[in-house]
Image (spheres, rainbow, N blue to C red):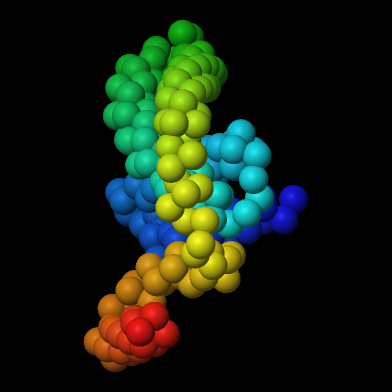
Length: 183
């Protein structure tokens, strides 16, 4: 449960500055979150450094989900024209037919695409996990650090030069501390 909440918080912070306004289709956060949860479960570790692999592999699912939503919207535009044509003939007007077919296609397409993508990501995670564990075994990766990294998108969304300057100074200070600590 803790890992699930931590992953959910990570993705909420990661896309904090992106919201659907107008015709913008935001990244599909639920697809990335669900894929990351499945991968973290499959990897069998609740450690943040191991879950980081699941988070990184789950990120492309947000783009894929958004692309799928765009394709669905284009498909629904064609259905809209069909509804307009059917509405001109009141005796044959049955909008539920269009709604049910649209929902069936949406559910089947999402299920198949998500299942295939998750299968590919599971294979990739199993392939990368041994080398990932070796690379990150000595690093102190924790959830607060991952959440801080994810919240950088919110800072950048402010579009305020002073916030950018403060972020740059903070990153430089942390980098300097790390370098001084290793010397």
